[in-house]
Image 1 (cartoon, helix red, strand yellow):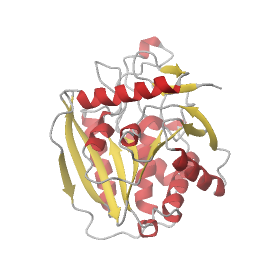
Image 2 (spheres, helix red, strand yellow):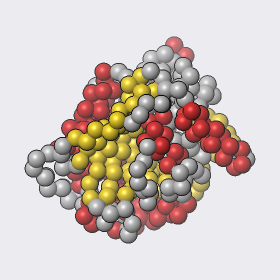
Image 3 (tube, helix red, strand yellow):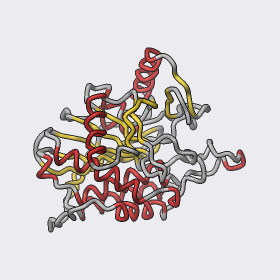
Length: 325
C-alpha cells in the first residue's frame, strides 16, 4: 500500500510524493495560475442552452450500478476519447442526448485549448442553491504509465479514468429526486482534464475554464474521478473540504459502505475540484487512486465494477436528497 501524499501526474513523473503541505499549496496555486494564463484558454465563453426533452420522464426510484455500467460501455465502444477527436465529440453528444432524455436542461460550453476545440457540458435541474457534481469525459492520448514502454504512445481507453464518473452522473440524471434536494443541481462534464504533461498541455483545463466563468457561487462541488475499480477504496484528499468530506463519508457509512469509504487522509490531488476550491467553494474529490491500470492500455471496461458505481451513486443521491443545502 502506498503511503504519504500524492499528486495526480503533471509531468514525466507520474506520482510525486509531497511531504510539506506548504509546498503543496504553492504547487496548487502555480498550477491553477498556469492554466488560467495559458494562451489556449482565452476564447470568450460560448454557453449554448439546449432544449430538454418535451416529455419529462419519471425518475427510477433506485440508482442502478448495472445501468451506470451501460453508460461506461457506451463510451468505451467509441474507443479512446481525447479532446478534439471525433470520438471525443461523439462522447459529448451522447452525454447531451442522455441528459435531455432524462429531462435536464443542457448547456454546452464551447472553448479552445491549445488550438483544440473543446466542450464542457452542464445538465441543470431544480431550484435553490447550486450544487455541482462533476466528472471529466476526455481520455489520455498516450499510455505513458504502461509497464510496456512500447505502448507508451498508444491511447488510453479510460474506462475507469473518465467513463466511470460519467456513467454515475448519467444514472444520477435518471434517479435523483431533485425536488427533495432543495437545490439546483448541476451535473458537469469536463473536457481537457487528462492530458497534462503532453506537448505542453496542463491538467484540469476544462474545469478551470468553467470555474473562471461561473456567474453564480455554488454551495458545494463534488468530483467523481476513477471511482469504478472493483477493489474500491475511497480515501480523503488533502485538497478537499474537510467538512464536506466528513458529511459524504457519514452518508456512505449509514448506507453500509464504510469498508469502501475510508475516513483517512491519503492523497493530495490536483484534479477538477481544485479550480472551484480556489474560488472559496467547498469542493471535494472522490477518487480511488489505488488503481494499477491508471494511464495504461489496460484501463478497460472489464476493470470497472457495477457495484462500485452503485455505491458512489447511491451515496451522492442520498446525500443530496437528505442533507440540507
